[in-house]
Length: 189
Image (tube, rainbow, N blue to C red; front, side, top):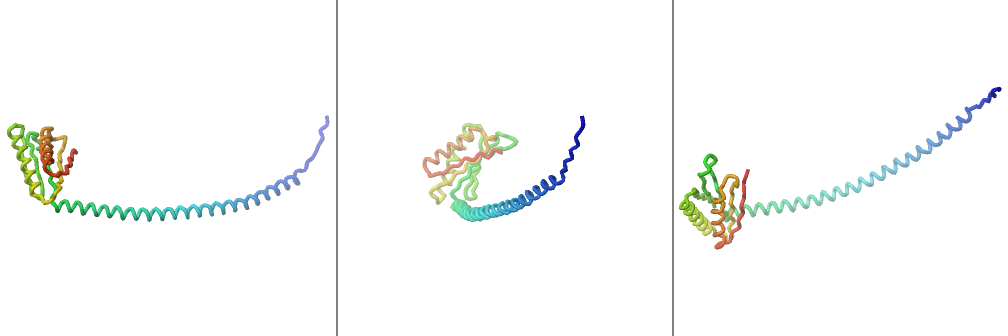
């Protein structure tokens, strides 16, 4: 068998293929330029919308901040008014850190502090309850305001339940005869 030697010349075919690729690239580069331009315009439009939203949010935030500043000023005025009115009685149960049997009740109002000692003796506890009621009654009557705020502060980890009941009972008795706003604050650390 004899081999036929067929010589195919590929140069003209390769030239045609390269020319077609060149046209495709030129055409696609033009489309890519259009794509980039459209994308840039869309992003600019989106950024303009976002900037407008941001400005609206800033304006809304500024108005809310003004409202909050007004509320804060009103709260501060109310707090100062309550302090000046002296319509606040602070009751605290204090215990000695080294000896739990040494406890006392502090009743504070208008820079006056009354200390009532507590112990486990029944007669002494009854006397402490009577003294607490007497002190609270006199402080409430000395106040010119019609509503009195009583804040009862204690550390539930360091006081006895009987001491808490003694003060709560005195507050309950005073509540029956006077308009009291009572706040119990557990200041456990």
